[in-house]
Image (cartoon, rainbow, N blue to C red; front, side, top):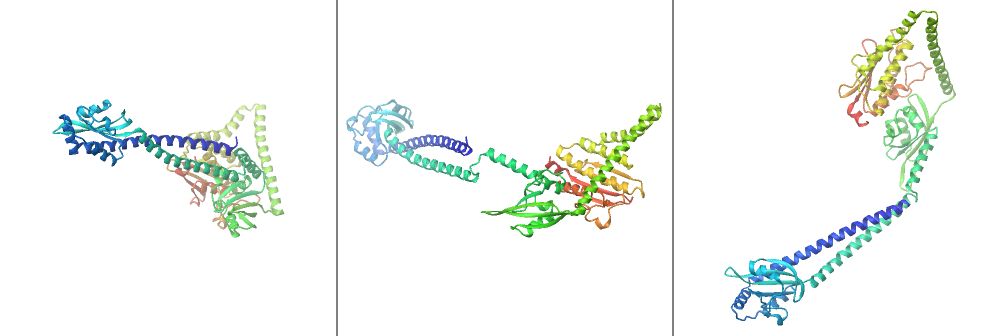
Length: 534
């Protein structure tokens, strides 16, 4: 069944059920209220007539076996009310008047008269008499404190039913109008939905969205769509990698302002708002070329689609290739160094130098076991602990002293939080290791790591013995592409990623040159903000 048919049938069925239930309840309440109103009105009229001196005198005379004609008097009262009949009886339930004069002087039909005569009660009942079924209201007639007779005010059921049906008709007509109006609204809604969705089914629309997302992600150029308020509505994987190296997910960008991730790109879009234009912008030291397409509809400008790509010349491409070649050579040298150590150990075992082999292994593992013990005791988060151990191995290979502060203490966090902490800590340690190693001729290469979440903040600190940040880039060191590394290194990315994640958690990052001639980078994250992203 198509969606519009399903919605129409479901809505009509629900509306009909509600109308039936509400109508039944209204009719039931109306009937009860109508009967209660008749009973209240009849009792009030009976009470008034029971205090009429002429009626009291007539009943008293009848009780003394004397005739007293009040037929015309009671008929005159009845014509001025909406009662079907008014009957006065003496203490023996003998009628003093009746709408049919031939029934005057005869016994009242129905046992419901006796509570009024015997107990002096005022009440209402539904019973059949000489005129038919009626709502009968009784009130006793008193003289000198004694009950001498009773009044019966009757409303024939046929007459009350006619009045009730008339009211039912008015209410029913109103309900039918409301029902038809509701059906018309449903039909209009279904046709509106049909035009809006182009008569497509939800499954088809969902599949189209998935296809749309896959197509966007398969395009190598970065694509971002922003709405009229410059908030990101769509972004593909290439754009995510260019803006944050992929450390943030797609939904970390959606509904966030473009200026939060790239102020130059945001300014480029706003420079010629609403028209197609091209332009260049920078992310740190890297140059990009962007094509900005306005999204115009009959309702006006909905936003912009932005396509951008790296604007590299031939020399920059050659630099990227050289970097990849250098990195390959570095991996090859590390593999060769590891093979040499295995060969040394194999040779010792072959020539029977078992003690020397054990010493060689012990030398390689002592520091390793010490650092493992410290990490296990102080860091509960397994991802961060694994990272610290991996960085220790890296520091050992390049000859940098690697220490973890004795006060380090870090709890375990959810996976998405832990991954971001790993990215921040890993990039700070990598930068510190390289800075300490590059300055090894001037100071003993050393880094110190301190992590803590004992207070209301998570504190991440990495200190190194490097030469520090040059003054000419000190104010821009956290921007994309800005780095103090050698020109043949892939640089300007690590601290930029750290800054992006710090901003993501609304935290702060600082750095300083200490009195011990070391460089200290510190990150402070509010636990309450972290909890919001769990």
